[in-house]
Length: 223
Image 1 (cartoon, rainbow, N blue to C red):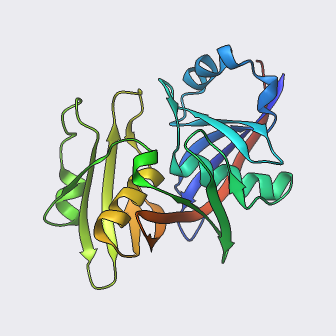
Image 2: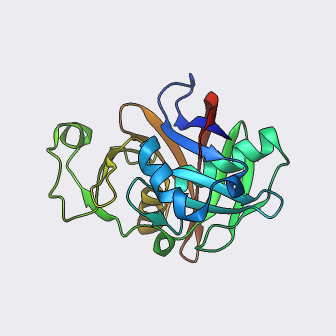
């Protein structure tokens, strides 16, 4: 048995909504050849296996494949390590070193668009158009977005990830980083049913994304 934490990442100000995430803090208890199967069995958009908590070495799996980097898994794992083990300044997924910081109850991670999935950013007329849009073709990796208030930097978005079995994602940190770098400015994003992501443009092709995290459940999982 191994202990599984189930989190929600990018909650709103009342700790509602957010994207579910599974984290095995003792990831070494799950054999490498079993991890993809476990991620598919759990069915979260991502599941994280922490291989070395002290150095921040992690691996990230969707139900269908392994990712070199993703936003909500790194935000959630950094928060959980700070709560259950020791705070970390860096996480080390396969993509590289992901800087971590905490500010005002929100956990932030820094990344680059090329580290994550190749999101296709599709701007629509307004927030209603985003909310009413039909799911785009499955061969694409689309992120639909529109300004809610361009002056204030607020955005409505929806993201769809078909190739890995996720479908529509509730909150997508890697897409938020892509959009922030493309726009070259800080933004706040309302995604999915009501999740909230905050970003900061750092220049030189880098951005950070962050938000609130909460634990929903801790349970034993047969590995």
